[in-house]
Length: 333
Image 1 (cartoon, one colour):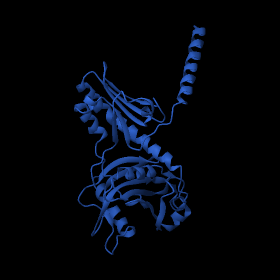
Image 2 (cartoon, helix red, strand yellow; image 1 turned 120 degrees about the vertical axis):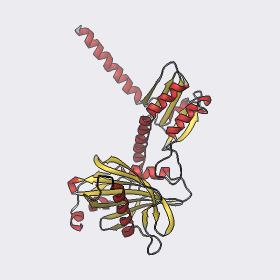
Image 3 (cartoon, one colour; image 1 turned 90 degrees about the vertical axis):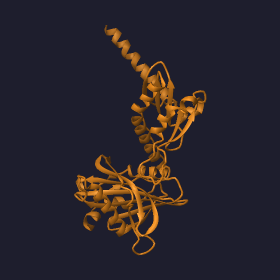
Image 4 (spheres, helix red, strand yellow; image 1 turned 30 degrees about the vertical axis):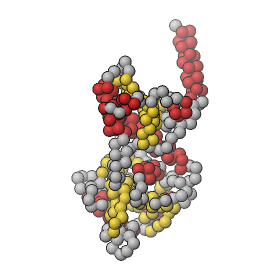
């Protein structure tokens, strides 16, 4: 019995080592952010099964001025899914089979890679598996793409240390982003793009300024509008950034840098002027420093899709780290 256990342990170790060695030879995954390779027969894709897939993976993104899908989907048939086509970072495989089930696998053909697999005996059972497992797979795809975006930032990092000196925090972002305004612990970071700008605002609020009851949406809107009036002016006097009045923002409980947060997605506009765009706002509870830290990303890009711009801003804000409150920030409040 003892010898048998020794052999079994050695076998498991060898298999594990073999698998680890094999995994090191996987090619690097490829693909744009928010892209999916959808491996599915044409007849399934063009019918109710495809409709179910699109319902989840091509659902409109919250908080954008026009409908844009969660993912850009590239449909390929199983026969085409070979060689380098298998190296996409996000893959979904949908097929009729002798079993029902849905799983999420990692690094099957490349790394890092997520492969969602849906199987069903009939079309109806296949649709059931898609409806049951898709939210989890989508959440994993989004998390992986956030990490991929953050890794790409490392190619050319912004080295400005104003946020650390003034607020005791750090954000990782590409060097193309620059601080364009710094006033009273308010920071405005901007990136110029072809048809507009991408922006990040960072500032502090008193600890109890946002209630946890049903009035918090109104409090968030009031906070944003007051900050806009103070620091984000328009072209003329009386013009400044506010929360768009026509649509209520989406508000969710969240977590950032391991701390309790509120996530708000919606539309901004300029008071008394025709100018608008999407925003995503995080209000982070910073108990050690007795404050709320507010991060907001917003885009001005008329006549341009904005999903990927907003996704990059979200990825930047999710690199938040608390490095320690500075004396400068404490004395200036």
